[in-house]
Length: 98
Image (cartoon, rainbow, N blue to C red; front, side, top):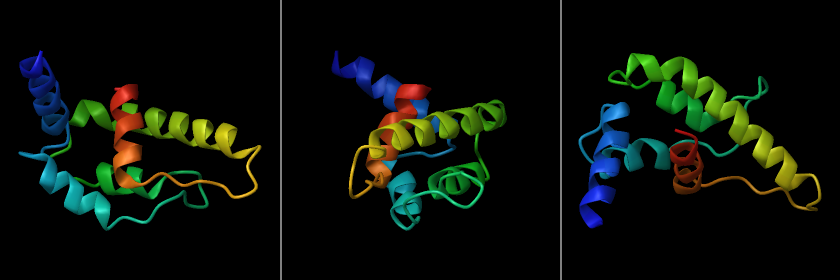
């Protein structure tokens, strides 16, 4: 069971051209939370600009980010104080999309 999770983790990291989670964490930890004026998350921009990003993931990443924005809009519509996803929360939702 643990081996299955490690394989999945390795697969996800490989999609982003990363050798370990720490590399990805350091990039995203410095990234602003929330969305830009065009509706793209700052996390999306950080991931999309990765030099070793799997090319076939690029168009799908746009769709996944749009889905995440829609989830956030739905969650925040009934909240007084909107929430923003931390980098690890964004990755959790993104990995669920993938």
